[in-house]
Length: 446
Image 1 (cartoon, rainbow, N blue to C red):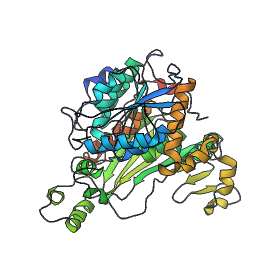
Image 2: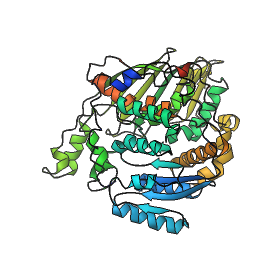
Image 3: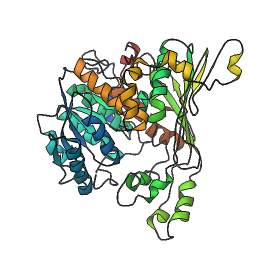
């Protein structure tokens, strides 16, 4: 979006402000009629989509959507002229003649939403636009598929929940990591009881992204860098956390209860700016406050623990951890490895995953493996995610992620900010399901 670095007026609220009236007024138990838990939308023969955001991420999603049966791209919007022009060229190259293009202003997407030939809209824009655009999408009677994180504050999370419930439109956060091969295999093994009773998980987004600070006029770093000057928090919690939450059936028999977080000093970006930019460059004038490493601990109602980390600054190898510990053993990634109880074999990691994959690869991955591995987008997980959500809408099946997941997973950012500011003292997660988690069926990705 053209003004990607700007936060829409009235959008950004301090995370440590008191609970809003919306939060207080929605604390009662949810009714069966109003809940979106297990919601099945009217079946669509073809999912007619609109896409907001045609930048780096948007281009990847557009390429994938164009190749999935049952999806028709009817409209694309981006207020940044070079991006929308590239989208025109891309659609022509892919032979997509159905798409119309919008981009005269930051709010041109609302003109697109007035169309009656769009069933679902993908919001692939900078973070500050995610919630307001998703609200507009649902209020226009369209399903909202929103990039991560879906919300930046607890107020925004509640707005997503309430709007989804009121409009009966799905709001799914596009947490693609839930559809990776290793994550799907882990889910399959957990469901089959291989690890025993679950006790603990570890999740992370540790990804050195200082180079994005060189995006000045356009690109992800042109707006993402600014968040390191605004919040001392886990800015991007869901890639590691989403799969762990699914293994543990969060919002479906268990839920996040409270969180405690602490941050390291914020040193790395200032040092990088001093090294890479002139002394009078805006990157050197900025004050970076987001700790280079943020570590949060989550306690669930059932007593399980989850460690969640965020670090996009320090020089170290990429990892999402993806560790899940049960009473019978542990499965982890980076590298992929497993250790199970029995004959003392748990004292050493088994790094040969081929036999485990042969036995426990998820049926969804096996069905789509050839297409997924040949596709672009994070080793195939993007393709599997998009194929799956289209399949659910076309076959009358609840989506694998719902608005309550989007809210709870995104809530780590404001809660970690509030805990950081309060010496690591714990902060409660709202029950976005308003009690529906107690009886909701566990997630079963078929």
